[in-house]
Length: 161
Image (tube, helix red, strand yellow):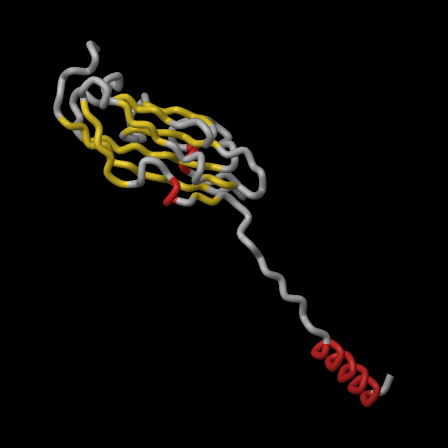
């Protein structure tokens, strides 16, 4: 093939390539989503008391969590998370299960007037269920962490406890 033929072939190929429209794809996020406005109680400061009938705080993320991919979503609940502590007050469950924290029955509350409650929400099961793993995304998984500060008012009437 001569040089002129190669130039014509190359020009024709370039014209065809440039004239063909490139497909445009709209990539929509389809992973774990959390609508913080639907979390109960609202994120931030929450008050509780050591008085009978006012010691229970129920945290609910069921209306806020969605995973369009249909992955099994887990929520890891932590109170005063500290990776150096060997034991941890935590609960693992689905987003449909509220986390009920009773300041009168927690071993943490006799000395603390403020606690940090965290919900670590993941759409992939961690390889190991230890304190640190749920805080790290797994493979192509997604992770969201929600925070509340529970301020405990004075009182010693924890319903006879």
